[in-house]
Amino acid sequence: MQSIDVIRARKETPASASIIHFNNAGSSLTPLPVQQVVTSYQQIEYNLGGYETFDKHLSQINDVYGKIAALIGADAEEIAITTSASHSYGLALQSLKLKSGDKVLCCHAEYISNYMGLLLQQRQGIEVVVVPDDEHGQIDLVALEKAIDSNTKLISLTHIPTSGGLINPAEEVGKIARRHGILYILDACQSVGQIKVDVSKIGCDMLAATGRKYLRGPRGTGFLYVKKDLLPRMEPPIVDGWGGEWTTMNDFQYRPGRKRMELYEKNFADVLGLGEAASYANSWGMENVEARNIYLGKTLRDQLAGIKNVKVRDKGLRLGGIVTFTMDGKDHGKVHQELRAQNIHLSISLGAGARLDLGQRGIESVLRASVHYYNTEEEIKILTTVLGKL
Image 1: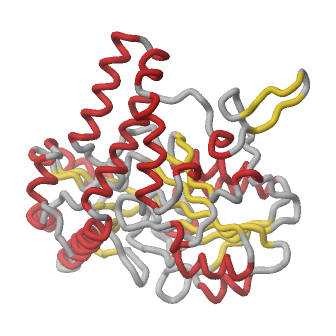
Image 2: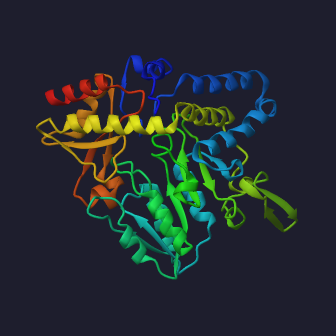
Image 3: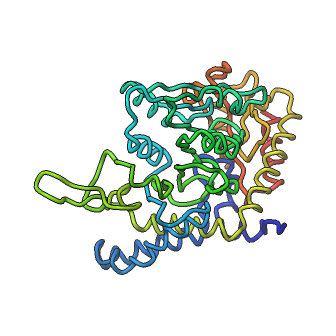
């Protein structure tokens, strides 16, 4: 397997020369090719006008769908552009039109906005059941299958949580969903761009993802994958002339295909940036990206384990590039500020934002260092050295 050319990756990420960025699970540093596509479109738009610039770039905009599809093993007609993974997940959930008495199975790793979306469904009479974790900390596959009954209409899984290094067994969940004929939505917010994601192997019917995190795209971008045979059943709660046709004075119909899942108005400079980010990620070979991220994550965990007052909090059989830890006797907020003052970027995940995971473990907050393939072993050493002195 060809390894990552880290020197080239850092050269194409100019900011990496002046900061140590371990906040890729929050928002990655954008590479030059993505920046150039976005700023080029913006410059033309400033001088030509919004609609005229859109018309001029229509072919490139249409190509974005194929670039995203190629990254996840989908078809271009199965991709809708959104503003975030939360937007994608909520859009998919609401478009399914679940009925009172229907049952949704989810996991302890659910992201805050996903679970609040499920709670909204619960208010409409939908039963929401949280499947327990197994002894390793990933979703319990046996418990998942046992929880399925005739009312079960959807399985929801967060592939990689925002609050830990866990990689949930998405393919195994897909096999269970297919065996029982149940729809399956995957939150791939933290996995697309971090590890190889192939919807045909995973077997999900829907997938929600964002641009700004491991994919290294612009903020305010995301996408939703919906399997072709499911699209005609989707009824989005918001529709405009792009996704629907006003057929008579008192009626309309959704347009066929992916268009029904979208609204017309978008930041098209950022849409092009999202497409470039997908192509850029693919150009490295996602197997290579995954291998390096897992390696860097393990390297960081191993070094953190040698610091006296640090406890690594990640759980799961498979661990990725998100590393979470606590520091005994330290205010995590102050640690975060001290590191940022030294141009070392981390994040904090709060128990209040991960009640099914951190909250149930009695953890108020964790420091989160999320590595990416352009990070280096030297940067990890600098971080752990600084932490050891705090």
